[in-house]
Length: 89
Image (cartoon, rainbow, N blue to C red; front, side):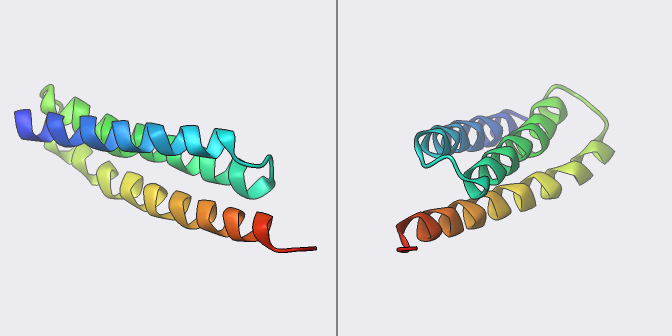
């Protein structure tokens, strides 16, 4: 369970830095969506791993992939937002 906890901490830390990058970026709808998706990923992915490591029922692990999906979508939306911000109008 220590390895599960360490995985949760690593993903939590990296995506918290991603949230910082989103917050420092242009204030567009793309960045707001990216921020919400990354935050949801932290809660769902890391949060589910934290509670699993603390002894929650194994069935709660079904939430973890949804958090991973939120992470992936968050980074894709962030990239779209960066490209959109750099494209001349």
